[in-house]
View 1 (cartoon, rainbow, N blue to C red):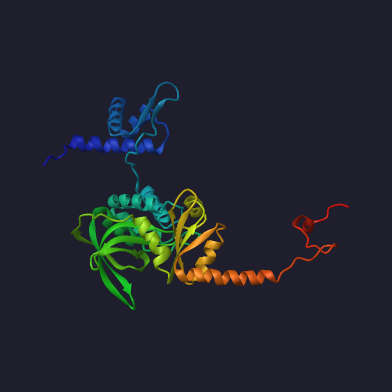
View 2: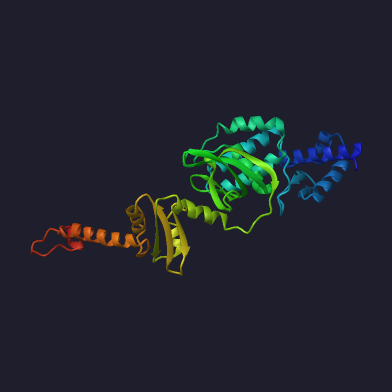
Length: 345
């Protein structure tokens, strides 16, 4: 085993200190850095070259106002954070993972998983305490324990089995699963996993899971469905007692812009058509949602919904037949232009 010498350790510590200084201020002169590090300006130049070989774009400018500056690079190199910066970053990522920023939940959780891997133990309790005071003002996302999210995220990354309790009827039963992805909807977090006890793919609501733990058994990933599409379809349809399919005469992009992802699955069926799969507690509610989109549509399934459409159409027609616009002076029903106003006469 190779053990670093004292000189090598001193050099590594000095280079990391140099990196920290460059991240604190926009420009440092050579003599300023040398004074902070207790070395010569020649050693500063050598340490700057070491940082450049590690991927940090350190720029040097000479003359009045010149100095060393850490600039943006083509790739993101590792950042050096002190304790307070690490705590603030972790708490901010927890807020992002909780849904405070639209579309940022998954990315925030991935970044938080990386930070958690290197976060010193002495900081974990402070991060946990501070995260308890972070809330989202929109109030839409069902709260989950960030520790549970972290456990599941690490299990997905490390490809190890998870164990947890999950409601089944009136009981909470133990489950074993191979975790693949965490999926965030507009309201909840879901775990997409292969259920080992049922030998099939399942999605689990994270807020319903209890006693979550990562096991030591590793698994080899199986060919799997698309995690987001699988969870979306389950949220939009299988959780409701009634499901319906419609052929909508509008593009899938147009309809997706009108329907929240958690409310329906929209499938492409051509440039001017799409299939909408949705669910609700009552079939009339599903029908009303599609009707309010403002596009022509056809009922594909279930058959009884087609009969319901005809019955509602008769009721609406009867309700409209009893209404007649007031006649104008010559006894004719007034046209739209005549009803709007007479202007100055």
